[in-house]
Amino acid sequence: MENSERKFALCVKNDDCEDLELRKIYQILPDKNASQEGYLRVLDESGEDYLYPESYFLIIELPREAQEMIFAA
Image 1 (cartoon, helix red, strand yellow):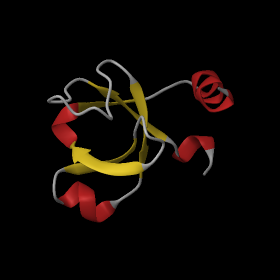
Image 2 (image 1 turned 135 degrees about the vertical axis):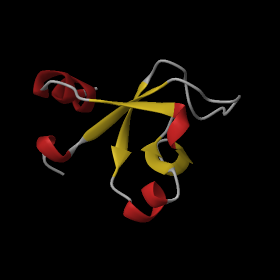
Image 3 (image 1 turned 90 degrees about the vertical axis):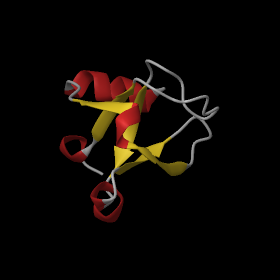
């Protein structure tokens, strides 16, 4: 996936969901069906992608340098 296509979100709510950390940035994967239902497909702490309510996140834009640092780790 190209850097320009990568989308990120800040976790602002997790309702005791063990796979999400508050105030952590997560990569969002494209999923039109999920977004129509009010969900985001997120790569979570387990390293897998799952659907979570959109209300758990704020979509953010990261500079290219920040994106590169996230994927280098």
